[in-house]
View 1: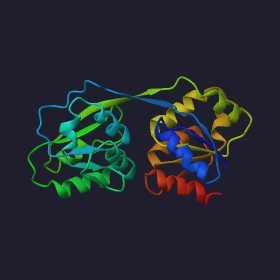
View 2: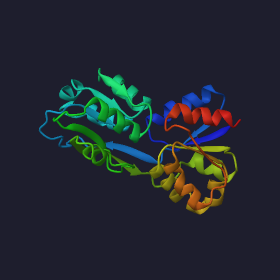
View 3: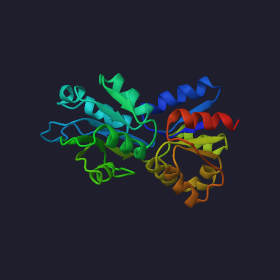
Length: 237
């Protein structure tokens, strides 16, 4: 199939490589640009652990001046991708919740029940779920710190525009609600063509703007991780 991948760099390259290895043709259109916040104020600590809900957060704290301190802490990651990113960046004690933010909350509540030291949640400006509030309701303290921002692309890359204009795309892969929203904004002048391919979404939340815009064929991964989404694409061939 001919597929458009909209996730930001550097993860888009890995996704493209995996798709090409399965025989697909891939066009890249990173619709968000991830920018670390180098001077993010983490707080005094000491922290009991680091909670990761994205690989972007792992990469951002790896650039932080206090990274040595953070690498000494246990890391609880939402899924395989964020866990793998943390390990690759030198974090040794990493456990994956193998799911979504709800799975992470359950894992943290089991492992840190009764712990008084706060948990550190480095995250982006836009969050689909308030992990800190859910854990606070369970008696756990969380310090949430914005360590990266996602800046929107102003337009689709020329190759993606051409592929849409000539009907050369069979599917589009979407990894976040915000990237979907920007896809629709950038395709405003060619919306009918942008909605025509099959849309493969990492989550139901990511798919919502596409449904509202009138996309006819939307497929949602059974689990919010890259491997499941790629398997979904493979199952539709």
